[in-house]
Image 1: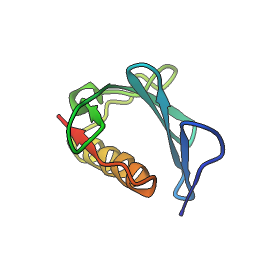
Image 2 (image 1 turned 90 degrees about the horizontal axis):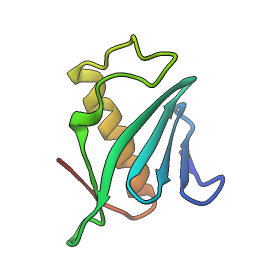
Image 3 (image 1 turned 180 degrees about the horizontal axis):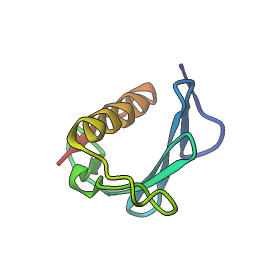
Image 4 (image 1 turned 60 degrees about the horizontal axis):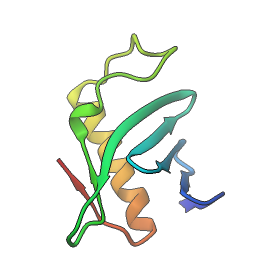
Length: 93
């Protein structure tokens, strides 16, 4: 289940959250780990484009933990589900 604790933040009861950082980024949190992801506003059916190739490793102090393809795909899916909860589709490039 998702909740919106404050503007631009979507929390999941699965232990992750997504925050839109203006003008061009997302902040993904999973437990105590943090990840900044590049994104842009787009014109079209989706209003946000997310760059999955920027998902490589967690931010410090967990930057030694590499994010493999399987984990990256799960993070992308979590973010997509969070935005769908808000009625927003994202484009993943």
